Image 1 (tube, rainbow, N blue to C red):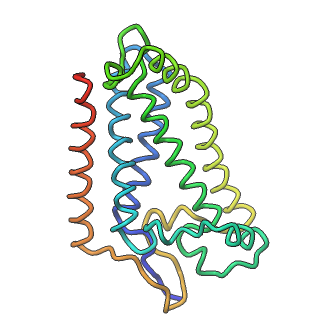
Image 2 (image 1 turned 90 degrees about the horizontal axis):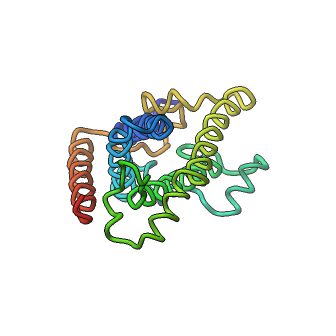
Length: 221
């Protein structure tokens, strides 16, 4: 077994930046009031990160690409039965792959509804002027109610799954998302993580940030 770079630096930074931003969103949303400007700023950060991850899934390191997610029912069934191929757990395993899609998808819904939400006091999303009042009310109720509750549930389930792997399966998933490496057979493909890839990631992140800024300005806010 040798050390193989599985998670490139852009993917690792995305993961931890997203985690911190989501925690900040939940806290500022709960506090409200003077914390709401930060809630909206963090919402734009998450919007940028989600857009970046969508694009990075096509041009990023080998194990960060969407095509490497084992999403078939056969893969998922084999994983839980212990009959799956070992390489299906090199990156995201089948269960983790579905977890990633669910988390990113749900965050996308929360960001979108946040963009058209209005607390009718002092805070309004940048797209509220582009949609009907009825849609604003519906989006606001969802964003502050069921949507937020389900997001917190997904986060807790994610943390619980990491602890379950550590305690029950003796697999510590955290270190690889810190240093990027796993002990794998010598012929395992590695993710590209050189200077060129990191410059590409920085340029892509900047483009995503500019795209989010442009999109946020559509409503004139």
